[in-house]
Length: 73
Image (cartoon, rainbow, N blue to C red; front, side, top):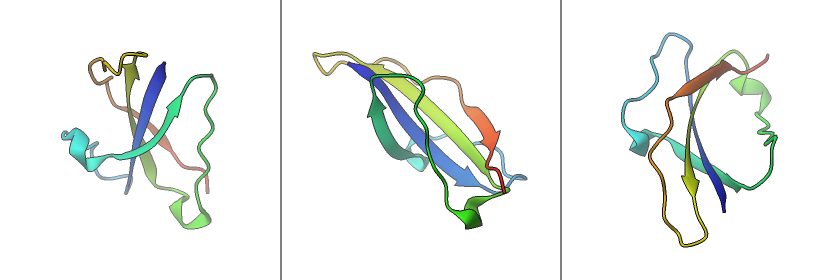
């Protein structure tokens, strides 16, 4: 089916959350690339991402490693 995309915005000094419950669901993406737009005040913060696969039967795979990128100002 696709990949669930989850994100958590945080100050640059903060490490990524260890608990997936701290992340917010963004989308179920079936095509790449997925583009996530941020608001101006989010510039300079870190966006921490988690993903997991979901198949057509609703079965979900394990969480990915956390990927982090700084939101452009």
